[in-house]
Length: 79
Image (tube, rainbow, N blue to C red; front, side, top):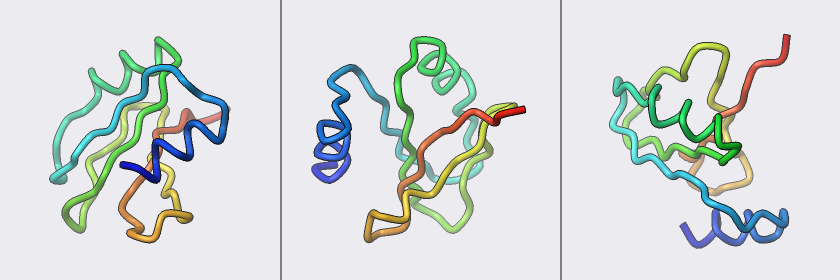
């Protein structure tokens, strides 16, 4: 969490963000869409091997710069 907080501050973001602890196979659609509508970043930490499905027209982007390789950011698909 410290790394994520530092990354947001470094990017100049000081608003609200969402970190979801994911066990896989969970439905985060309502939480994610609410945050996206408010233009708030959404992150997911993957506990298991399988990641929960992203909401329609979105995808989870792996944040490869984090050493755990378990943190993803929700991104909107571009047409």
